[in-house]
Structures are given as C-alpha cells and as structure tokens.
Image (cartoon, rainbow over all chains, first blue to last red; front, top):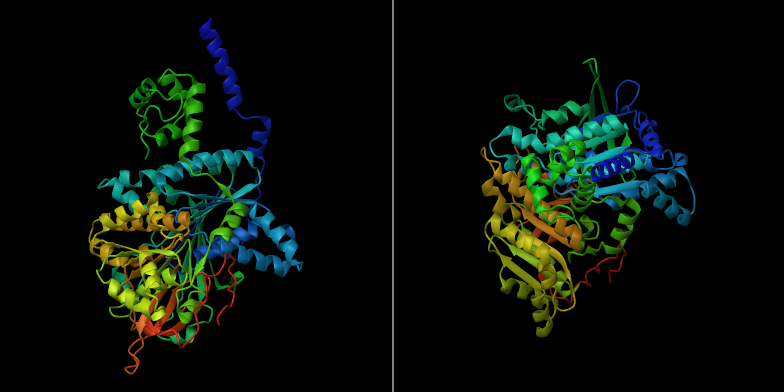
Length: 298
Length: 339
C-alpha cells in the first residue's frame, strides 16, 4: 500500500516539476532577437542570432566595459529612445560594474532622444533599470551555481533576452592554481560553466556577450614576432567552442606624442571575427571613441 | 567548492550523504549539476526529497540577482567621495576617492606615493573625522611624520591625538599576512576599528606590489592566484563596507619604448583598479616637492590629463590657502564649497 502511495506521490511531484503550459510557452516563444543590437560591429547583415555567444577580448583600457554599457543601454531603453525594451542579466565577476557611469550614459541618451522634464526622466531611468538584473559572483563554483539558479529566471521571464558576463576570465588564475599541474583539472570548472551555458543557450535561445581580459601585454615592434600571439584565446576549449563571434578590442598606440593626444578622444578599434557553421570566417573592423554619453562610432 | 555535509539543509542526513558519496557526488556543485531522476534511483531516495534539497542548497549558495533600480538606489545613498586634501589631485580624480572602488597610485622611487598616502590619511582622519586603516608593507610609515603633518593642520594637541587615534596601522611584509589581515578586517575587524563615532572610510595599502611582485614571474601560478585573491578581498571590502581603497604600485620600464615607466604587476593587475594615477617628479630643481600626476585609467575623466601639485601641500601651515573641499555627498555632481 505504502509503495503505491509513494509512487502516486512521485508522479504528482513529477507532474509539478515538469513545465506548466505557461513555462513551456515562455521557453519556446522566440525571445527578442538581438540581431540589430549593434550592426556596426558585426560583419554581413547584422549581429548575433539566437543562442550565439560573442566574446569581447582585449587588454585594459580598450573599451570592452564601455561597449557592454552601450549594448546594455541599447537593450533596456524604451523604443522611443532607440532601445529594444528587452530584459538583461548582468553577471559581474570582478565588481567592475559602475552603476553611476551606466546611469549617466542612460540619462544622456534619454535626454537626447526624448526632451522631457527632469522628473519624468528619473521615472524613465528607473523603469529602464528595472529591466536589469545584476548578480555578483566571487568564484567559478559560485558562477556555476548561479547559472543554475538563473535558469529559473530565464524560464519565468520571457522578456530576458541578453546575458552579459563581465568578465569570464576573472577566475582564470585561481582555477589554474587550484588545479595544480593537471590541465584538465585546471579547466574543469570553466568547462562545466561553458557546458551549462551551452545548454541554456539551446533551451532558452538567449544571447550572451562576455568580456575576456588579455593576460599578456602586446608589444609593438619587430621583437613581437618572437613572442606568441597575445590575442590567442587562452580559456578552456569548451568555452572556445561556444564562441561564435570574437571582437578584438585594441587601442591605437599613442607613441611619443603623449602630450598631443592628452585630453583628446582616444580612438579605439574593434575587429570582429565571426565563424559560421560552415567553417568560413567573416571579418569587420570598426572604430569608436568614448564620450560622456557613452560609445560613439566614427 | 562546497563539500556536502549532513545537516547542511533539512533532509540531508548522514545516510543520504554517504549514499551520495558512493554515487560520486561529493560537492554541492556535483549535486546541482547531476540528473535528479537518475540520482534518486541510484541512492534509493524519493525524487521529491532530492529535488527539495537541491532547491534549498541552490538558494543558499548561489548569488542572488538584484534589480538594477534597487542597486542604484543603494549606491546613491551609500557612496561617498573622500577628498584627498589636495585640490589638484581632487580635480584629477573627479572630486576625490570614491568609496566602493580601488584607486591605484603608481610611480618610481621617490615619486611621492607614500607621502600622498600619508597626506590622504591625515586629511581623512583630521578634516573628515573618519577612521583610516593603513597597511604598511614597506616600513615607510612613521608616526612622527604623521604628527608633523597634523601639526601643520592644527596646533591643538588634543585634536592631533584624536586624529592619530583614528589611523589604525598594520605592519606586514608578506602576502599571506596581508591576506590574513584583509580577511580579518572583512570579518568584523572594520567594525572593531571604528573608534570615536566615525566609521572606517578608507583602507590604504602601501604598497601592494612590494608583497606580490616577488611571487610573479617564472612558471608558477601561485603568484597570479594570490594576486587575484588580494584583489578580490579588497574589492569585496570596498563594496560591502563602503570604503575607498587606495593602493600603491611601483613602475617598470615599458617594453615598447617611451621614456616613462609603466605600472608594474602586469596586464592581469591592470584590470583591477578602477582609477590609476601615475606620479612623476617635477624636474624643477628649485621646487623639489613638485610632482606631476597623470591619469592613466579612469571611467569618468578623459585619459592622460596631467595635474601638478606640491608634496608640501599637506604640511603647509593653515594661514595661507583656504580649507580643502569637504567630502561630497552621494550624487556624482561635485559641489564647489571651496572658501
């Protein structure tokens, strides 16, 4: 008798655990396509499709985080201000999210688009910020658990279309040290995160942008040919397989005329390499500079 | 990596932990990533119970998402900008040191990094009446110098003593004691160090490269991992306890060319501070205290702007020159309260 009751209990629970109709709809319904998020960055006819990963790679000061703020604003702003009105999750692994800077960019874009009074500006800003979810992770194990936890958010919020990770390389050195001499153990945690991310991409069709810091300084000059290519990807293979578009951010060297360029806008370049499923690669270069109101393309 | 132990959450008893370990599930991450149905069968435990345990563990150990609007509200009410005491330096840093961030001062030997740190500590403890934690890893801090700077600010001996009491000094010379000290501060030390009504508003580490640079280089990874740990705990402390972290760094000759040096500790460290300032000697023999500061990384001001200031500013007597700008409020707009 008890085993029958137990089996019935389990079946009930299983019915609960499987998706309700609304959740199924939320999962399969096409999330907001972010192909037109920034057409100037991507080659061909636009940007990342559903379920694609974009990696922004570069050394310090090349504008990666500024580009993320630009894309974030583009997503959360209302349609009237040139935005896509999509929800965004920002996973912050090294406390690099500067909310004050983000809000100042948002305010300047709202001002430029809708010339309204200051009070309703604050309202508009607040409603934009409510579309943003921020999560702080302090280790790669916590990142893995957080991605599992976020699965609930993805299934319950069909408006969530974008996942930003800044940065995915923050735990590279601690993981390497923990793994000791065994390369597989070193890469284990990030591989697990990448596999989980791959499954979330397939199931929920979100788009992911992640920044990756360069670990070697790139020196200009003839001696650089003897060193290994500083822009070679160094994260684990599971992550490299996920990345479809790779944006290499770099800064034009100021050279000797530092005094001349001081104060003037530094031009930053982005080189995009998109690998398609057929194995071909498409390229595109663009440049931008950073103003008070965010990123401006030249 | 969190190991599974009995009593971690309701329903996780010793028998279940042993059963899970036999099924090669030793940590919370393993449990969360594995297939619940299969695991329930292997450990002969009810699917419902296992799913409930998984949900509780996930809620306990994963990071919780916060809405952007709430985060912004909290930041507005808790961020403060601490003036460094020197108006030119304040102008360079967009009104001063921001709490919740790491600011880095780099420079060659004799460029005045420690003097600037002393000046900032004295200004915050005397003018702003807040507590300061000073971590000295080079042995360059003497109370006599701090007293000298305070004597230039006020001639009242009692005020000088009060201000000195607000500066808490830690002398450490290797990275493990630094980590110990920082973790201790995060785990309640900051509350204990808050003396005389004020709270700790600044943590100064002079210098962070002295303890980390000897560990870098070669094939070992421990140095880079320890550097990441130091950075992580400094950032957590800055964010969670609303303090401004000021660290100093030395310079190395840059590889490509150019006369000036580049900050040390490499590309991996360069992402960590939010704002970086490079100090150089002025080059004018008649004014030996003159220094020039260049902003090399900032999210608020255009890059490579220079400001000149005199190291003697913090020791000048108060009859000349007005008082320094007071600590600003939460909003980023700087209010001009110079006299």
